[in-house]
Image 1: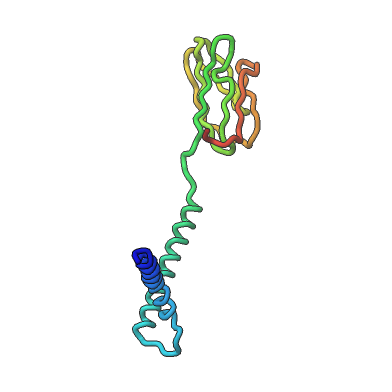
Image 2 (image 1 turned 180 degrees about the vertical axis):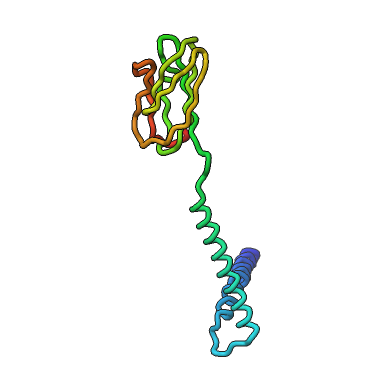
Length: 163
């Protein structure tokens, strides 16, 4: 008897849940103008709903459009090379994304002045000093970094940022 009662309750609860869950569906179908007659209140409700949803969609579209047109300003990739004894660079290779401006800084750590060429830009690094220059973003590629005329490092562009 208890088993039969629990099965009956389970079926009854499922039926109630199904009815409660389907009420919004039935209401939305009847509000869509299924009958030939329409009252002015349902027309007004439908009109205000469609206007608000249209204006909300327009607001989302304009926000998306303005976000797409907005570009970041003052974006630059910091790149720092240190010239060590014997004209060696630390780090010997730096990898960055392509087409972004590069803020190159070269520091003399060996106490001597150096002539450094990064991309096609020539930099004069003072003894025990540093020099910094903003360079336009290069295309993807592998660019040697020269210290006093000899290749000492590499700047690799076109890699994806992150781990």
